[in-house]
Image (cartoon, rainbow, N blue to C red; front, side, top):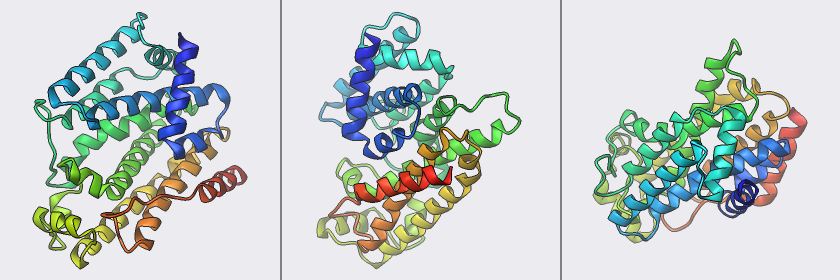
Length: 293
C-alpha cells in the first residue's frame, strides 16, 4: 500500500506541482518521495476545498481526509496516499501537529465552517491563514532536507523555511487574483489595496474588463515588492541547508520568484491570464542551483 501511495503522490506532484516536481529531482530519491507525499496531501486537501462540491459536502470530505490522516499516523492507514504520508512523517520525524495547522487553514476557505474567512483586512490577519497553508509546509520540509533540530542555528533556519512557504503563498495569491475573485475570495489584504485606491468594487470592475487599471497596477507592484523582500530574507536560511538538498530549494525559490517577473512583464495582468514561468527557465534555475552548491 505504501509504495502505491508514493507512486500516486508522484503522479499528483508531476501533474499539479511542476515547479516542485522539477526542483525535487535535485534531491536524493528517498527525500524526493517525502516531498511528493507532502505535496500530494496538501494538493488533495486544496482540491477538496476549491472543487465543485457544495460547502457541506466539501466540509465532510475534508473531515474524512483529516480522520484518515489521524488513522494513518496511528498505524491504521486505509488509503495508499495517506499510508505514504504517514511513512514520510515517521521516517523524517515530522511534527504531526503541523497538519492540524494546515487543516485549520483549509477550513478557513470553506463557507459554513466556523473558521471561514474570505477577506483579510491586513497582512497580520492574512498571516493566520498563511501560517497553516504555507509556513508549516516549510517546517515539514526541514527534516526531509536534512536539517536536524539540534543545530545551533535551527531556530533561524526554521524561521526562514516558514517565511519561504509564506513567500510562495503570496506569489500564488498575486498570480491567482482573478481565479480567487471568481470564487469570492480576496486574499490580498484590504489595507494594502486601499493605500492605492483599490477596493472590492474597483477590483471586480477590473476583473469584468479583464484589464488592471493604474491603481491596481500600483497596488500589485507594492505587493510584489513585499513578496520579493520575503524571498530576499530567506536567502540565509537557504544557504544554511545541507549541500545535498540546498539546490532543490534554491531552484524552487528562483522559479517561484520568476512568477513575479512574469506578472510585471504582462503589465500586471493577473485578470485575463495566468503568469507561468517557462520550463526551460526553470531548468536553467535548477542547473544554476546545482552549480552554486
